[in-house]
Length: 70
Image (cartoon, rainbow, N blue to C red; front, side, top):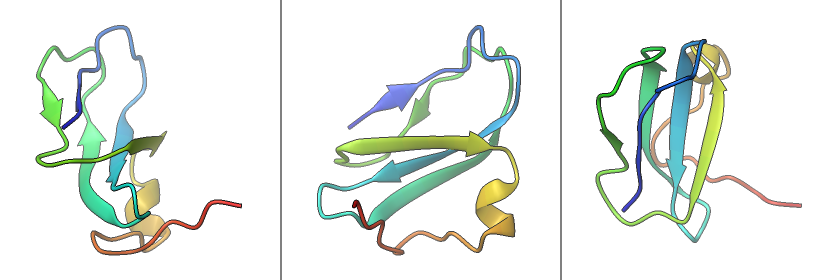
């Protein structure tokens, strides 16, 4: 399980938690800048992808989608 916070991060982010098999396990949309709130993957993940807030919804990225690494 992975946890993050947004301390010293000045822009809102979407945080995508990805299992070892490449499947998206959880997404935290629009994480608040400079927040000390702990953001949890809520399960076993190997990778985390941070993208600009709102981008996950704009790109249609959802829990259960698979990430392909090249």
